Image (cartoon, rainbow, N blue to C red; front, top):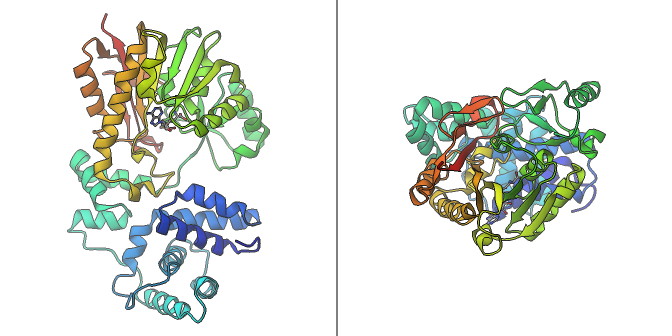
Length: 441
Ligand SMILES: C[S@@+](CC[C@H](N)C(=O)[O-])C[C@H]1O[C@@H](n2cnc3c(N)ncnc32)[C@H](O)[C@@H]1O
């Protein structure tokens, strides 16, 4: 891509890759951005268009029902129609005629030589503007919510089956709201000084509802500050930060973080240790580079040992009872993260849940033998599905009768039965699950 592409051309190139190749929006978008020289304002515009169009894809596609009279043969056409509809429906500051003009230009730029693509785009967008937006009949609850909240019907049905219609509607509406800008202040930094500095820098930090360690900022960009570069704070979701708070640390422990990359929780653990160490495993060698890099930035590198390893084989390397604390922050469907990673809802299927459940259980089975007699084992996921959360806990306890759930406090929340489920609409955080086990006394 040339360095002189417009914001919308970068957005369109990214959307073509995401929709055609199933690439992850953030990776694809970063690649596109790196190849261009967009101003900050143009980067913001491209970001809004890319993430908004992916988030609203099902809703936007529905808007063209009855208007597509011809097959869309060129692969840029559908993404261009969707991103144009997104701007018309969700970006009020952009006049409709500007969206039409830009769409015409992009069709000429991305279309084949002598392509009639720009005429097709122009015709469909004008028809859409004349007819206006549409929704399915509310009588069909699943279809209605699926289109309104741009979520596949299986997932809408899943949420209704598990939480009922009202709660499902509330969860779905919350995942389409912008994610909060939250930072966790390092345990090695002075919380109040960091807060004062953030205030001076104009981030207007506010207390988190669920944890004492985090602050909610009015906007992003904190990664450019020296507070971030010097490791006084890190960008972490409020609910995600609770998994480590479920442990009770003395500071001298040997800790195993079985699935550690990119290291958000490894670092949090390392901050709690005075003499102990955290062994950070991950099955992907390249991702462990991030753990090291983050550990260095957060000034806890010396307390972290990284090791490429499938956690399901950890019992072949480490000794029985070697660790005082074990965290299994398991690979999961990530359905609690939809707000931040909008394409997750389109790529996961109900079949993934049972496959993931097997892997999660397998990891727990193999690492639990490494826990010391009085140790603590925490299992967490960034998802909300019963298959990956409560069912894994139940199956683990069934085959490991020496373990029991242990009640815990994490941040400002209490898990009186040893399990904590945070839904995305509860506090506006990621959806998250934590269970804590200890050996029977
Ligand atoms: C939810 S992420 C962990 C996030 C991390 N704990 C943090 O706070 O930054 C799950 C991680 O597990 C890793 N993983 C997947 N299967 C694994 C396995 N069998 N053994 C070890 N790590 C695995 C993935 O590569 C991924 O980095």
